[in-house]
Image 1 (cartoon, rainbow, N blue to C red):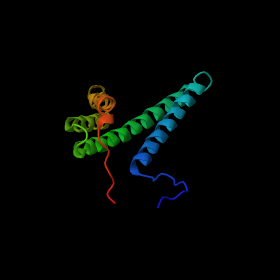
Image 2: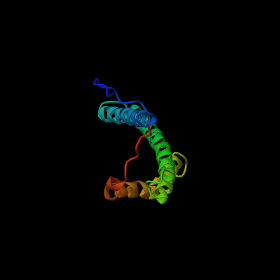
Image 3: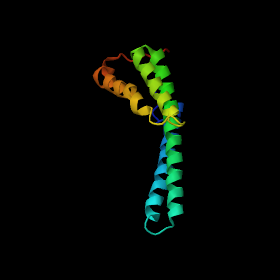
Image 4: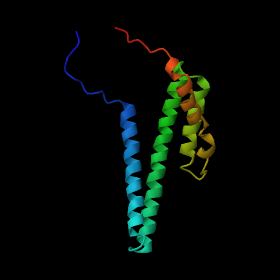
Length: 136
């Protein structure tokens, strides 16, 4: 029997993590806009504090994104739908983002290949994957 009333989508971990990352990035952008507003009128120390706050928050957002990529890489590796090498490359990209939080900056400049290849695979092959049927 199908219910005629509309149900809200379930809140899962993926939507919560994406909302958290988006929130962190929006707060970071707010700090950058505040620095821009103070640039001509405010004290230079305050502008530098706002830019430092932006940098810290942006790094936090990228760290959360790195954790997200680690989970997506693990799931892609285990799923069997996506080539396992893409799961490994996504996990490496996630580790690159996490490594950028430390003194090894700019590692993610070279580890983005997993993200790019997953997007390419989804465009080329993603529609051909058979959907999983729910067990009743």
